[in-house]
Length: 310
Image (tube, rainbow, N blue to C red; front, side, top):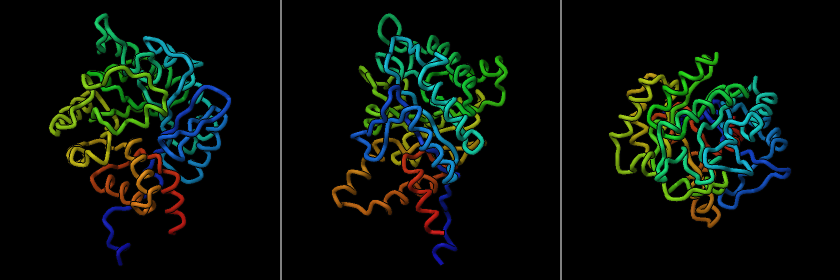
């Protein structure tokens, strides 16, 4: 009876798995995210094939380069790690999963910010948009079907859409991280991408105290042509997610971020919570608040659990 009257259901096709791919010959386990790896271009093959076999909706790829510089040159290098990984993953599972790529400079810059810096050390919004344009073409050329614009620069959706269309990539979709907050819950992600961040990102990510601002950012991204909009993080911003879902004419996604994953893992390791129930409840709550799909590191585990329950 509970199953019959359930208002919110989880399905593997509504889950997207974030995957980190680093340069080098050996994969590496992440200390702050138990069970999560930095993959290589070889080990990622098995991970994405499993994702396809489980019926996940897609994978979101993040690159972890060896070398970084002030403008994030590796992000636009056709042979850079993210573009290499994209070609590998598309060749493996491009007919079974939506292969997505993170379009942001933070993994590739030596200062760790999401954009290039001006002479005073501040993020230069317009100069960064030029880099995003080049990144978009590089990622689409590598085979990415959906670009995840996570940098939170003003005008990034319009700039990327314009550049993609000019280069014949009209069918490459844009996911706008439209309400992305300057959150404490990104901590483990910094290890995952080898972040070298100096300072913080409060000048271009949103204030956690602001709810209406999330709606304003969403309206701007929709006006610029976003195909999907995202709220990040998910669990601490369910009110913002519900606001966006109530008004958006395009799909709304949410990202269960690294710190949210790490909290569940730490609490369950100490015996304080029921791990499996907490995982399912957390993602169900995100879906209930209005997310059409969820980026979560738990995607394969949830899909396996759902398969066992059938």
